[in-house]
Length: 322
Ligand code: AMP
Ligand code: MN
Ligand code: MN
Image 1: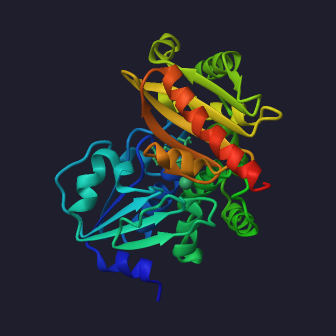
Image 2: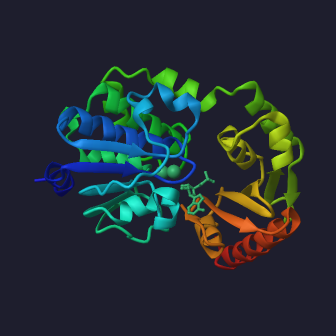
């Protein structure tokens, strides 16, 4: 018997959460699992807790049931999805900590194994892919499948990043067979941009800098500029991906101001350079080719600091012949 499903069967109340500033995989894995549990175990008291996500994700079934603020409930089972460490749970951490049983499902190289049971697969494209493999395939409905497909499509950059495997494509194929609107999911949640999103993307590209002899491209947006455009943090998704495809660069950096002298940092690598190590050094984490952290200081200091570490890591890679 599947231990993961046994834990669900044995629980009376189940809470599900993901990381702060939920992305497509975080949202998709939580909602894929939530829809499955609601359909297969309707008698259980189940809830999803997530910060507000991109409005484009709201077509996913039962999105209107998501709780955005924590409460005092003590769950018999609480699941943390797509989180490498407990601090990534943000305000929902106490809910996780006081639950009878705590399960982690994740695919980050930086995962600390903070659950009592940890389903961590570094070879999985996404947490949504792991959730698919943990569930009974024939019981995955179209509603649940749409969410899992959203998660897989987002974390693979629509099936193009190096985390995409044959298994990823096979699972995506099986989800397509459920009759999900796969073109629409990709177009409306990944490629389609609002006018504001395009404006900030354009501005960030225009102001991008080539650093470290053209091996690194970097850009930043401050709070004032975001306010000027009326942009939220979810409007910045995809900027780092456009920076990354700049011809000739090994790495891309994108920063946005989250508070006074505080920046959210996104890092991407096109080479053997492991950006999860750089992010981990600054208290964050992620994957080898996509990682993030939060840093303090003025924009120039943050960028200089990052470049020093990236430059040193690149030299080390070159010395090793990579
Ligand atoms: P992002 O640049 O925010 O798209 O994040 C890239 C990857 O790094 C994602 O898999 C995130 O879950 C992870 N990540 C981003 N920020 C952090 C952080 N502060 N701590 C740990 N992991 C992070
Ligand atoms: Mn994520
Ligand atoms: Mn993920």
